[in-house]
Image (tube, rainbow, N blue to C red):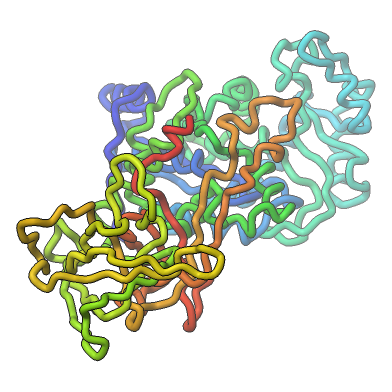
Length: 560
């Protein structure tokens, strides 16, 4: 797989790295890392971090490690690991011969914990979780020391060894760092560094029944991998002193460089949730079908919806990397998708709500093959064939019996052009017993193929398919998953309250032109005048299913 170069706009992270390279810091080397926890699928916020970390490594001819910070087997699985690898690869990035795992360092991390005990900087604590929270204090009240804080080094070594041997139940004891329970930084108040979990790990099996905490593991893993620039989001800023404390108080292998952490504001999109816990809630509650549901802001969901990796990379490159928080309009992401698909998606016609049109002066036994371009601006994409027949279907929305204003479609005694075909004029409107329009009788002018003779006032161009030559398909029209611009903004209101009740409309029996008969899974098209669509994996040999990727223009901007 060839690497994709991401052109990252100048930002403070890039400036820091460029300065370090110029000064020869870290021997002129750049090593970054993307360290997801494998406890869910990646989302759009992770895409910005992927592009930033891998992009900086590419630009400065360095290395970016894909590392799984897999310290909590209760919530992690190989499914998540494989999905993360697939997402990073799909975005166009490589991580070398193999991925890294924090679990690869479990033995070294255990050795660091024993070293801290021997230095009098860690102790085994018997407080229950409830008691520990009480002793820790809060933002306005300092914590107090655990009654077990002054255990002897010998007792702590013995108890920690017995923890590893499996003698104690889950939650019965923990190993805590001995730092400062009166620190204004809550992370420094004797944090837990090891807890007991009798559970199989997806990488190490049943080798361990004690597992290091994320905060103990993360910074030390950076150090073991000789990461030069640990690029994190702002929520980890208050954790940096703790990471530094661990690195300062253990003995790293000889010659290891010290990592430096830099924080930037995470991407926040309106009308979107990016908490993995809450995304999992959407899945578990069957609000969506799975992590890769096209309504989800996960990378796999966006891939299934028809987004391209180029569109996501361009969006991330154009999104400012800054220290201050901000909200990015979802329309910017969709605009990036449109810009990419406009030049890469072949055109096709699909009638979502068919209305029969009978051509009165067309011979019933005659059909005609019309040849049109697959893309109006790129002849290299080739051509496709349409069949003109006595009966065709147009969309119901393209006819008005009593048009108002500057109507630009079909109406009684008015004319439109069939895309790529002839001009037709509506002569008669046929209704059923309930008064609903069920058919139009129109005439065509055989002199109008590819040109407009004088004397016509044409009300625009409409898409169509032949009644005798088309494919019946199902179409899913997706809308924003949330109706509120900030569904997670009010902590007193459950974010599920803001789920958009109209986030999916299924159209069964739409009619598409025959050229789509053999479309492949994931193939993208512009359905003319309807939007961009892609083939969904739920398609069968008997019927294709198309997902709407994005509309032709941003209708939500007007709603906003």
